Image 1 (cartoon, rainbow, N blue to C red):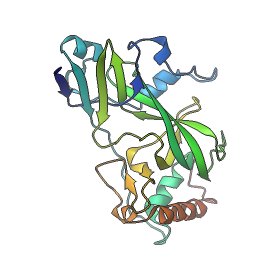
Image 2: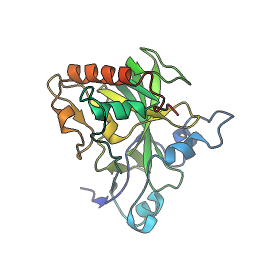
Image 3: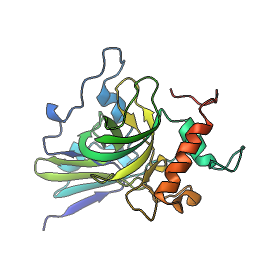
Length: 246
């Protein structure tokens, strides 16, 4: 059995090609963008591991498969001023989102980051319902959008390289999620924080893709109740001048 090297830090994706193959490079940026999609997406997969070694350097110093565990920093949400309903956490998340959608994860493709120290994954999502639309690039039911997140899986020279973020579980193919999305510059893609995505697949429970649950009151909701509360939260901010969709 081949040895597996575990290192505490990194992220997750899917690409069975050499690490620097052009086939593992994201689509080109729009002409107006000042940075390439790869540069923009790489910022979404921070690497905090000791020594700041690159993945090629770690592979050269080891044998077998490589597993890197990274930490994903969470933003802070919580109770605030305003009425008890809709839940303030949902109102805040909706207020700070470019778009809020219910969607199904279709396919994830992983890539090395620009500095070769981590991995990010581009997921395609089929939109099932739009709660808050993106005013710059509106989306519709049934549309496919790209959601970029840290972590992933690569195969490099026959060796598995897996990067996981300890408090951001991976998306499951065909899984259904409620996502509070942020636009990634001018790339046309979106990203999401781990505590702003909810798994909706289980009819009896709702869960974050993080071990560090911030909203226990939402964890007890059924998916239908959470979706109703999300619609109410979006409705509550429709006329708010304080909510930006930048």
